[in-house]
Image (cartoon, rainbow, N blue to C red; front, side):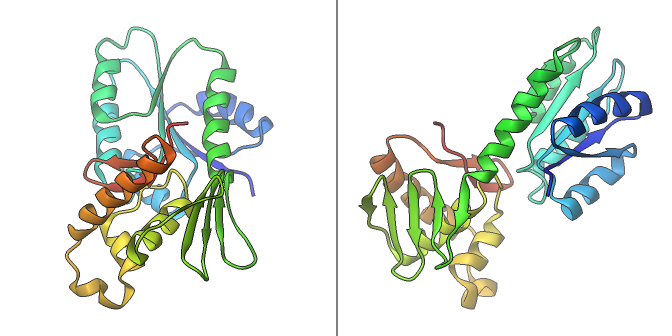
Amino acid sequence: MKPLALISSKDPDFFLVFGHILSVAGFETRLITADKEIARVIKAAAPLAVILDCQPGDGKIAKQCLSLKSSEATGGIPIAALVAPRSGKLHLELIKAGVDEIFSRPFAPEQLLTWLHGKADLAKLSRETDSGDVVHGDFRLERQTHRTFFKQNEIVMPPIEFKLLRSLLAKPGKVFSREELVATAWPEHAAATDVRGVDVHIARLRKRLRASVGSDVIRTVRSAGYAFAPEW
């Protein structure tokens, strides 16, 4: 199945051009013209990324980006803004809103394709074996023994941290809300567990992994949750 890129634009000609470029490069594309529809479509379609067509004078685009990035349901989806010339302070407003990447037009389409392929490659790095083990790069999490390895070296951790890491590792880049992680780590007590307790366990897991890996592999997304996003 081709990775899906949502294109938010009110210009059909823009979509025809960029939609064709992305399609030739192996992506599925879908046009969204109504601002109110984008969050609903993201939740339903789980796209690889969202591309915003930013035109001069469109004061809503930065607010739209902020709304998506602030939501637990959509905050983990990468957003690229294609900013037209003479857009004034829009660059700064988008950065403040949490946009992941900005391309100032005119630009070579290969730049956007490289960014999208990078997101797609990250998603492909994780796989689940027939025995239920999760493998991502140099990480291997054994389901039956609850053991974690990085470059063949074991990282000893308690069961709750193992469950949290397994969920994050299985879908790299996806932002998991605290509620989702509670349901993963404490499925039998999810309704009664304080979601803020996740922060404590994530902090311990992050420290443990940093000591073994040498860098931070868990990203905190403000008001949204956590994602496995290694810096290498």
